Length: 378
Image (cartoon, rainbow, N blue to C red; front, side):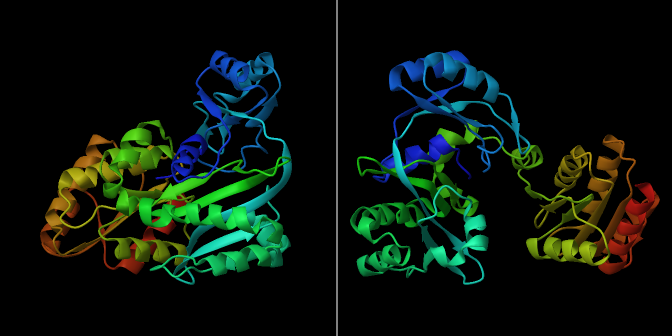
């Protein structure tokens, strides 16, 4: 679950990390009221993506009138495909310097990585490209977490030795998000050092592991209804589907994550681009298949669908019935290619043929076929 900034800050504050006072505003009048209470504020769009400042989603307001005007401009705007539902009005800080602090999962190293840099306020990807030597890195032992001397060394390697004491304390608090919240990413950028010497989270990103969501029902109950995301992923979640949006034009349905990933690779190899990853899981019934196809067809970029099913627990005849029903109910006109093998394969193939759907002989041939058909229909 990817939290909005104000939600992430609430969680970080519960871990003992200082944050500026702020108020959520759903309307320009609420933003003006927040400014009356807090003084000069930063009016910030609340969307789960970066680049808000460059998109005009963050504005400074010195008076309630300016806050009202800023909120009116920001609420409802589109930032990288997300419509801004509300703003967060946060007391403006007297900034002395900005630092980057964050951790995430380094999949190449198969470990969590802590990163600290004196070049705060910039995208960490930009810093890594332009000045990689300015990023100090630490791979904490996952069983015991980072030790004090390791954190002190990290701070000095980042060139922030004068801030060793407050930073080591703050990093230990941030690191608690991994074992306590199953966080996969937590980032404070900028971590602000004020003119008074305080160290405060100026921004925050926090993403928790969806696979561990059952351990954090409180977060889901508190923030889940407020989060917006990719509309197709949101709809798929409502239908209990495992779905990830991609930027291609060929819809993919498979049963099992490995088979789905393999199908994506085959489509890529055949010269196409997948529009999504959709795993209907083992034992999927006709209703699940129809739901998957319905979500995929919501995307206007999709020009064809490839379904790759191996029948272990999943029965081929059930899949075929679901496909035929979905195609008819959704009045699907786009090319549809199916590769099916395993349990009740012949029954499934027969159902498809009887209803005008020719199953592919192999996964590779099916991938080539759907790429060819989508090119023709483009």
